[in-house]
Image 1: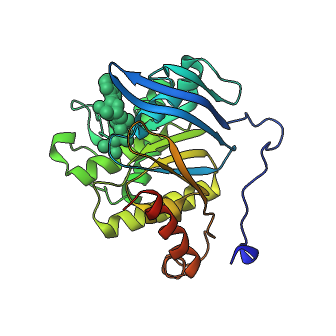
Image 2 (image 1 turned 90 degrees about the vertical axis):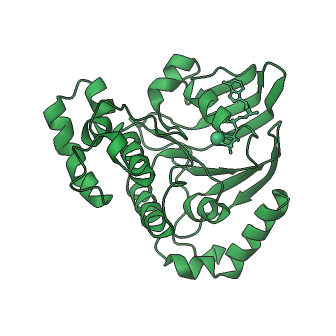
Length: 267
Ligand SMILES: Nc1ncnc2c1ncn2[C@@H]1O[C@H](COP(=O)(O)OP(=O)(O)OP(=O)(O)O)[C@@H](O)[C@H]1O
Ligand SMILES: [Mg+2]
């Protein structure tokens, strides 16, 4: 199958004028009191590639996203996004979708989605007009003016996802973005994300408990050990994006990669 793949990852350095959004993580260790959450994490994520992270609960996946985004500085080691090395510079480059949706309860769904644009000085009305078509696309039409408390968990998650996209950053850090969705909505959102990232590539990290999701949506997958999180296995996935999903998940290549991932997870 590899030889037939019509799609390959873009080169490390995209054309001139494009800011490098590759991510380099060296020797990252994160300690919280007596807890060693992460240890010895070395990773290079090439610009515009998508990396999936799977691992047992509590192994430091969310912590690593916080380290990258500059919300938590690692206890040891370093993280760089292109040339951005300080926490503040990294934060400016990242759109983070946290595991908990963290919508502002006093703003409507539409106004929550517009938050990042407004923070960048876009007028609220203009931001709302940009967000509106996406509400329809994500099955949220007619819920624009609902407050977060009036939405289901899956709807809140879609609003949070939308807010992350609207931030228009070149690095996406997605922490279990589809965990609260039913399988049909989930498949449709996955397809949408894949289409969007193929059309307008970003450097993206996707944390998920779903091995199929990681294999389907990314170019590479790393498997973490139980805490302290260490990388125990790396897989190259890179399935074509223009082939029906059912064809991919039933292929022997997919089954082989899935088996390797599950074995590394000790499932
Ligand atoms: N701010 C913090 N203060 C203290 N301990 C923390 C903090 N953040 C995370 N931890 C601890 O670090 C470890 C890793 O947590 P983290 O949330 O990164 O795991 P995870 O892999 O994302 O788990 P899950 O799959 O359940 O979301 C856990 O033991 C957690 O209790
Ligand atoms: Mg987590």
